[in-house]
Structures are given as structure tokens and as C-alpha cells.
Amino acid sequence: MKKLYFGPIKKQPMRHLYILSVFTVLLLGASARAETANPDTSWKRGGFAALNFNQGTFYQWAPGGQSNLAFTGLFNYYFNYNDGIDIWKNELNLSYGTVRNFDLGSTNQIDAFWKKNEDRINFESKYDRKASKKFFYSANLLFLSQFDKGFVAPDYVNPKSDFLAPALGTIGVGMKWKPTDYFDVFLSPASGKFTYVRLQDLADQGVGGVRGADKDPLTGLLIAGTGQRFRPEFGASLILNFNKKELIKNVDLNTNITFFNNYTDSRVEKRQNMFVLWNWTLFLKVSKYISASIIGQMIYDDNVNVIKKVEQVRDANGLLTQKVLQQGKGIQLKNVLGIGFSYKFKY
Image 1 (cartoon, rainbow, N blue to C red):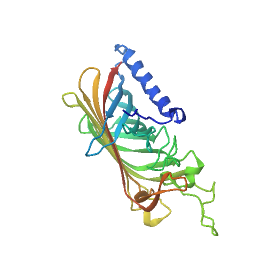
Image 2 (cartoon, helix red, strand yellow; image 1 turned 90 degrees about the vertical axis):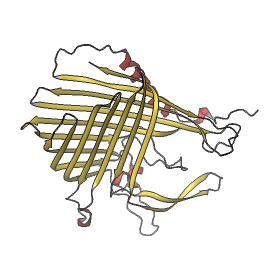
Image 3 (tube, rainbow, N blue to C red; image 1 turned 30 degrees about the horizontal axis):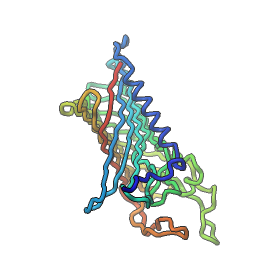
Image 4 (cartoon, rainbow, N blue to C red; image 1 turned 45 degrees about the vertical axis):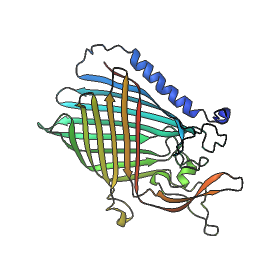
């Protein structure tokens, strides 16, 4: 019987292992913290940590299939203040997942290395001051990015993203309507949206919607170093939040959708376009230490082109690459389901 081939392990990047190790430490640290009474009842702190595992195996399976192994780490932490007049909510959500495909009995492992299948850094801070029973003066801050390099298959040589490349931030002041404890609507006529790309080579490609590099008029090639790394925008935003603990027994749902309109865009024809960001996390508690989670995100950004049609070709060395045939504006969507060990904590 042929041995299972996992590829040249020593040559694989170790960043996946380092990042997942961080989530392991967070999980152990959360489980080690004893739940103690907080002397200041205005403050509430807590969260959860989880490590999920998925595995599928196919051997001589006539209908076809790809064996795989996947790990995902999740960490959530909140620290909130509420004295009845001033309310300050802060929440950090981190997630990272890696997957590896392989075939039993095969040594032709084109895809036999670790790739990320989930990667998110999400921090949100919201300050509210009570104006009436259901209305609040409000300010909102949001930061989004990722830990690791991201690729578009089958090209695993040229990254399309990296740590803080891009990073997205929004900040706004306005009013909030909060009819219930778990649902609110925030409207800001004065909001800023900021995109930052840490790496110049990705900025030259126009990653995240920044202005890409200029083209040489003679060759048509990009002029390295001329891409914009920072893109500020000013406009109005609308944010809907739904955060329900025990939506049904042992099921928590946290979802929010952000709309942003840049009405100061230098390109007048673009001012009618809307940026949309929708996040959702569904957390299902199976037992004290076993849980399932569904994490998803949808983005529409008129400044970002998405790949709609590609053609797979082989280069001179026989490696599989892709040629982009069509790209344009479109919806970006991802969704990750995981089952594994988890621990909720509060203090």
C-alpha cells in the first residue's frame, strides 16, 4: 500500500503554526482564569476562545473528492462599561484557520501545503451617552485587517493581501436608536473611512481600493513605488447591530451591517456608490467545552475589483498558474463552519 504523502514539510512556511499557537495560548489562558466577582459592577469583561478541527478522507472513492485537514482558532474578548448614562462597549474578534489538501496513495501533490481559509482581525469600540429612553449621542470606531498572506488559487506565489495590507478603519459620530438591549441603529452624517496598505508592492496593485501604481506610457507596465498606500474618505454611515445572547437555547448570534457613502469623492460619478460590510458570528454551545461556530463576512466595495473569470495555464516549468480573463465590481463573500473545543469566560 502506498504511503500517504504530505509534501516537503521543512519547506513549508511556519507562519500558520505560529499564529495558531497564539490562539492555543489564548484558549488555555481563558480556561485558566477563574470567574471572580468584579468589584465595580459598571464594568463587564469576558469572551470566549475556541480551537476547531475538521478532517475529511477519501481513498479510491469513485465519485471523487479531496482529502483535507483543517484547523481554526477563534478568540473573542469584550470589556464594557455602563453606569446608566454613559455606555462604552469594546469588542475584539480574532480568527485564523489553515487547511491542507492531500490524496491517499498519490505522490502528485500539486496542492499539498497549508493555506489559510479564515483570517480576521476585527476591533470595534462604541461610546453612547443617553439622550432619552431610546436615543443616544454616539460615536463608533471600527478596525479590520488580517494576520497572514492571502492568495487566489492556483497562484500561491503572488499574495493578494498580507498583515495590515490592507487595513480598513471607520470612525463616525451621530445618533443611535436602541429600542431593545440587543438591537440598535447608528446614523452618522459625519464619518471617515480609511484604507491603509502596509506593503508598497500590494499598494502598487491597488489592493483594498487604494490608487494603484502609474503605468509607463511606453511599456504599459506598472511603475514600482507610485501606488497610493493610504486612502481617506469622508461621508455618511449607517450601522445596524444585532447581538443576541441565547437567541435560542445555547445559541448566540452577533451580526452587524455597515453602509458608507463617500459623498466627497473627487470622482463625482462615484458619489452615489455605497460601501457595504456585513459580519456575522453564530456560536452554538454543544457542551461545556464543545462548541460549533459559523463565521461569515460579505463586502461590496466599488473601489475594489474582484476576479470573475480565470483560465488555468501552465508556465514553462509546468507549474499551474492562472490568467485573469475578466474582473470588475462584485460581492465578496466568505463563510467558515467549525466544531471544536471552546471556553467562555467572564469576570
